Length: 113
Image (cartoon, rainbow, N blue to C red):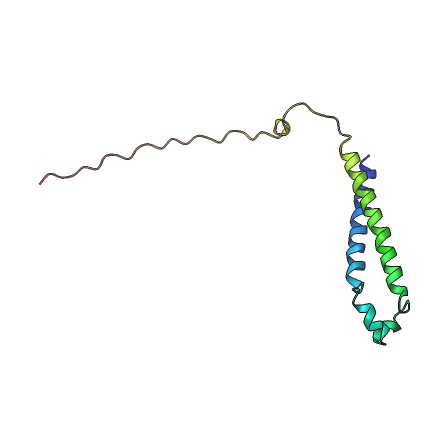
């Protein structure tokens, strides 16, 4: 079971990082107007509109993978046997700290005049 959880967590983290990278690479909606008038965006690797379709579809696939991994991790996280009691009952109890006794200071003697 730990192997499955490790694989799911790794897949979730990789899809999240890839999604962040793809979202940062994509142009906003206002960048399409500049490509229509001949700015440098039309000479890209995928063509004028090809990169938007490819990047947006890849982002959607990665978002789906991330969402499915999140649901699977939540499902497997709830399969642990239920315990009756507090979470703190299973905590390691430290030995009690030694007690230190502090004696009261001696009363100061005031010389008589």
